[in-house]
Image (cartoon, rainbow, N blue to C red):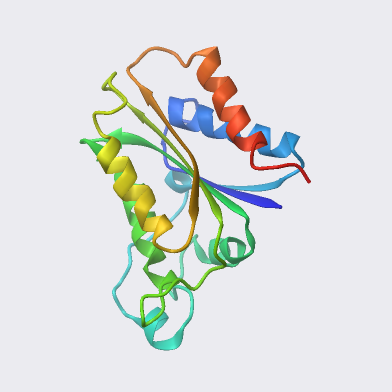
Amino acid sequence: MKLIAVLGSPHKNGPSSTLAREVIRGAEAAGWETSVYEIEKMHVRGCQGCRACKNNGIDCIVQDDLAPYWKELHECDALLVSAPNYASTVCGPMITYMNRHYCLLDKDWKPRIKPGIRLIGIFSQGQKDPEKYLANYNWYLGDFENRGMIRHKLMIHGGYEPLSQEELAQAFDAGRSLGTL
């Protein structure tokens, strides 16, 4: 079984990245293979709206650092996306990344990836109330769910306090609960 993790924070030790690494650790403890993409370190272009994907039933033709990701996505069993909240929603690079998944819907708007990929979303925000931007996170994850993925876990760290041991344990359990091999 394989988990792909796409981390969107520019802060390696920020809360969304730290929680994501705990999910990864939990998945690896359960025997999962993992692959990590750090969007802030990558050259990722936006969707060009060229429709080559729709017209030809193929993955995105834009040549950038996401090229190897598409093959892995078709083979994975779980996808973890993590991001900080900037300006009331998921940070810009992760929106660009999300938009690139346009290619995973065929010309009839049906998903072109295997159904049932488990989806984990981890977000951090300055606002203490975890419900404050919940609709925005649901919208973001909903784009992946529209491609046949199934939400496994949503975690939101609110405020500027350090992560709690409980949050770290929940993240580890989210990875481990994907299932053992």
